[in-house]
Each structure stands twice: as C-alpha cells, then as structure tokens.
Image 1 (cartoon, rainbow, N blue to C red):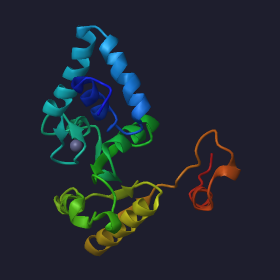
Image 2: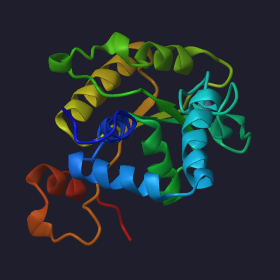
Image 3: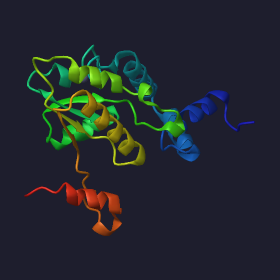
Length: 204
Ligand SMILES: [Zn+2]
C-alpha cells in the first residue's frame, strides 16, 4: 500500500509517466504542486487541458496546428516547392531555429521500425507522395529528408528516397549533412556522424 493519500499517489503516478521523470522526481514535483497556490496548480492543469483541446495536426503537413493548417503552411512567403521531411513536430522547431530553411515541412509522425511494429502505413508517407504529386502546374522541386541520423531514421530516409525516385524521377531528393554537435570534441563523435559531416561539408 502507498504511503500517500490516494490523490497524492495518483498525481505521482501520472507525473512519473512523463519522459525523463523518475519516481523521485515525480514525488518532488507532486509536493511542489501541493505547496503551490490553488491558482498556480489550476493554471498547470488548465494548460494541459487546453493544449489537448485546441491543438491538432495540420491537414497539409501534419505539424502541430491550432486550426486546420499550421502557421508555416498558411505563410505564403514560404517556398512551397521545397519540402523538408521530419519525424516529429519538435524537429520543425529545431530546423526553424537555424533560420536555414524557407520551404515547407512534412511531419511523418515517427520513423520506420519494424521491430516496434511501425510500418510505412503508420507514418504519413502516402500523404507525402500524394502531396508531391498533387499540382503538376507547381511541381515540388526538392524534398530534403531530415529524419534523425539514427538506425530507424536512416531506414526511413532510404525508404522515402526510393519511393520518391520511383514516382518522380526528375525531382531532387537530398539528405541533410548531419552536423557534429556544437561544443563536442571530434573524438566523441561516432564515425558515421563524422563521415557524414565530412561528406556534407560546405565552403565557409
Ligand atoms: Zn502545415
């Protein structure tokens, strides 16, 4: 039996389901909530409720959106002829922060992982093919595949590159040169990362 009153235990249990939050941290956060004013604690609960009620997926690119389309798809200044394919909405934020990209995105919703039962049908891959094929008047010029440099991300990139080549042989498909983590020593980078950083090097 738990040492805590059931409502406290319930809060600890829910908090400990969050990524990176172990049992002890969950307990500390729960006690923080208990010490907070009603106003502060309700603001947290309300923020969680609101994000679930108001945020959905963009009907075009599957990025997070608070309407039918996300801000990027609604922005006419963004180049619709270049599409960057990423795994998760958080990747869009990371790429936006670089200010290197002015095209549109396509969020897959994960990466291929047959071991975990994640097959092409589970991701927005068919939607990507339909999207690049949709307007012959304004063809997509380039698809930049920016899935993670992990085993599953690589498998996903290869799968999509092959699928795109088959459907639109004339379109350019590129893969991000994966950079070395800023501030880390070269010796700590694995060979794959380092090799790609070299292959993708650009003049400065
Ligand atoms: Zn969108």
